[in-house]
Length: 161
Image 1 (cartoon, rainbow, N blue to C red):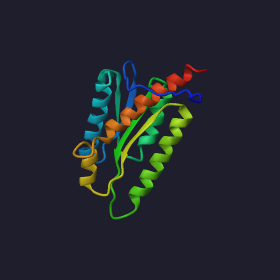
Image 2: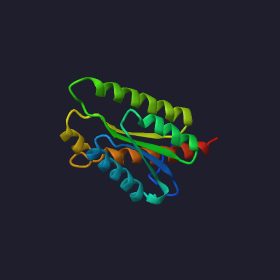
Image 3: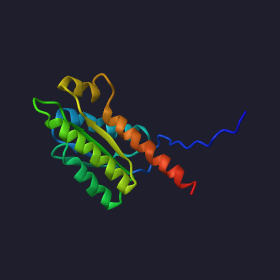
């Protein structure tokens, strides 16, 4: 059998990790559920709620600015961005979602910290509720789990240096 490559993976272990969770007040019926899902996921993976910071954003467009602010403190291992930008009668939602996602990806690369993307872009309130814990899981929890794992992968890679 030929030699196998080395593999690096991260454990879902949030113990000792600090995250900032930026959550939009806009569509709070949905975003409050995303927030609870994220906090629950961190707690279920040995993280402490007291070690996390929740920052409320007015809307989805303002999330990247607040993510930058918390990353600049240097106090967090990663950030979870949560929001709900629902389709309306105009393409306004497409502009907000596209710019927010690009800005969040850019901030993650700029600061070298994982930023979990938990900003929903549903067509309807029903779809949003399904994705915030009703039927299709909780995208806030999924974003938090992705950040936990990415932090652990980063730390495993750092040990290779």
